[in-house]
Image 1 (cartoon, rainbow, N blue to C red):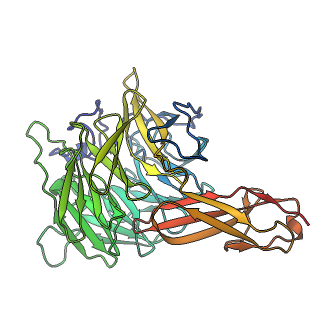
Image 2: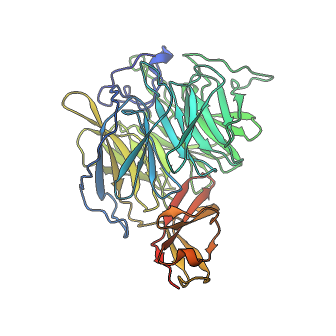
Image 3: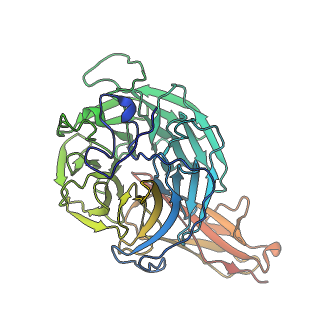
Length: 475
């Protein structure tokens, strides 16, 4: 596939490319600069933001990452309390702490010689790992909290995996952007693929690969009905797949791209809202949509013309947040559909993705156009006014033989699915110490004991992690 020069955003030049040549509509967040190597990080505070208190809405702290590479530049919260992102400039998975310290972990396989790995989406899995898609190398990968990466090749060649989500069955689900299929992959790597049939078709369907695939899935979310939901941009439909592979699709009334603008994207990202509905973005129509599980659609128009709503995520409480890919802005979306933009302070910045961290802030990678026409990548931490939404602390007396417990304070407003615990000694995980309680022993005297809680929320199955302040054990 050819790399494409990406101009400053227009409604027809950014996002999913809907041209007659499928090779030119391969990626939603397309870049052209491929730079190898590990990049040094210097945090730049645009406006001070405190992790320990509520950062006001629009309070920004910016962390420059370095050159931007071809691919997704997606971000997600991890079970360790950090944010994890895809970085295509160095073909790596990045980890950034709440304070902005960044570490890169190279993907240990051979990239496509022209396009690199094409790392796109990333999300937390039910196994405590982060999972990601590698578009051009046709594989799915996982990375543990120590940075060890495992990859799995997909059985359908050139299917180009893009969207990925944890499913309610404990597996990962992946949309194939060049094939009419959805992939299910277990935590151990066992793969099953299910076809996406054309609307109204009956009987068996074969998964085929095509540069002009119409029934190709794109981005995904766990749904409120024990299913996974996904967008199908080429035919303006939203799909639902049950855990045994039955697919149903629902139409969305979107504008047909103009003859002189064939690359317009009609549907992009999707998530489950706290109201039990599916929420999705319509960049070409400048709208955000809400769909019931029965397929009834309501649409809300952005107050900013040609703002191109692209990515969407849940916020704390009942709010959602979107990127306005046609501007240098994000926006809050209430459950009633009221859209309020928040402008990024960096000129020529295009927000690529966004996710809420345990500090209650939004974390968003952006592309910044340079004077050389190259792109740089930065990550913004943006206040939402909520303050920390997940915190832990050690309760009890830190003495030998005295039972300690890990207390969790969750103010997100989301429903808890599971909580996993890990006790740490001097910052390192204690093998086998995975319960809510821990009793120090003689060897723990004068060590510092802390606890980490990783909370997965339902139905969207996002995960947040938080580590307590340590306590010193005495006799």
